[in-house]
Length: 550
Image 1 (cartoon, rainbow, N blue to C red):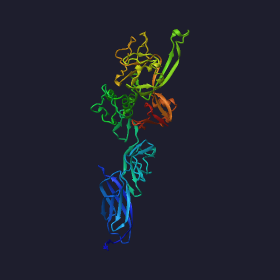
Image 2 (image 1 turned 45 degrees about the vertical axis):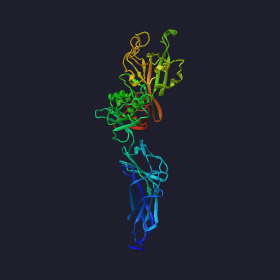
Image 3 (image 1 turned 180 degrees about the vertical axis):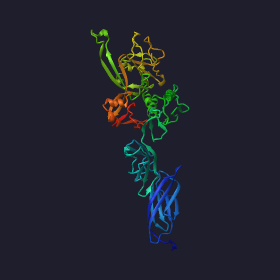
Image 4 (image 1 turned 180 degrees about the horizontal axis):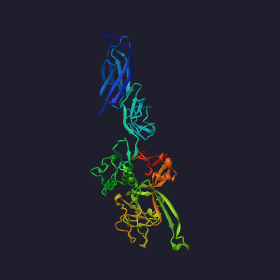
């Protein structure tokens, strides 16, 4: 009943309980909901309410309602504008309430989890946001809630996975608040998973290692490569192919930003790897080639006996290893003097031992990128080693300075321990099976395969040897060295060292070794824990940058 043009009953106070903005699926429109409550006279208010949406001072929507809620659907909102909602008692315009709305909240939310800390990042939020609530939902361990302070662009939440009963997958939601009643669009991240390596024993008994990026059942790993990866030809035209390069589980894209895709549910074999490398090596820049080799070594599923083949081209059966940026090169030599310069005795000319270690890095030159041996830099003096024709191919003498020779400046190097190689000295009958060769080449395919007789038996070059090589004569050892960390201390070890060998070298045996935890750098540069599904994995070869704790 209406008396004197007013509805029966009166509203004394109006309270906004909730005002929320949510982005509608499949577009750039929003839905706005507002709920309120009132304090009224004993005779309840029977009239209508007016809900209005304002953009600044301009009214852009309104509706009458008899219930204490209103919905604006399919609304286009400007993220840079300021919006408010106003609710008025229809018969009592002096009773009203206005609350702000936030459109731009936690945009471009990203997250990562390393097993100990959940890291969240987002764009700078609207200055009107006074804070928010972060909820982390786990599959089996409940929901965790955290306050989000105003004006921040990220947060780090300690969540040690050792306290969970099983490996968890997180769902994160961020709900911003303009005040205690008004909230903006919720930001959500699905399936945040601690990246990790899973070591398993296959049904046929072979030990394998898989890398998982976002979830336990991930089947595709995609890594965005840095910069322009395709090289230019002699005419300055890019060598980019017309279609993606695909071989087995590996695929290289042709659209910038360039991506390397690895099927993580497919075991990589050497045939597919070698075929893929041969397809792309003539197309890529040197830096891109090394980047892709690194990503494959750390991201593809592989059998344990193949790990070092992908990591550094180690082939014990072929007596070879490839030099990679970041490694070190250790040269150990026994130094002798000619017998005719010795004053009697049976010392056989022995003088002493010489050991040197050189860090390998990729240097940028005017004509090409090339591997550089850092400790040699001060010796690069043209007065000692004047430039020679790049076309010259000849053995280089046994000294350390020979690595400074211009003809040895190349992007790719291979250490070769040949069987039955003959000396390059005059006497062809001097057998030197312990000589060490380091081969250099401008391209991946140009490095010759490890064959006996890289040097001819007559002490001269074979014409098939088309690259410069450095010969370390007699009683020399050339070893690739990698760095690992054990309980925070750096250890420099030869390529091929296993967990077991490292433990034994530092006096760790038995149960202590089983308690150790191994972390490996992922294709994305972060550390990822290696989880062993069964039994000790002490025969696993270590990679450059591995970390062991325990």
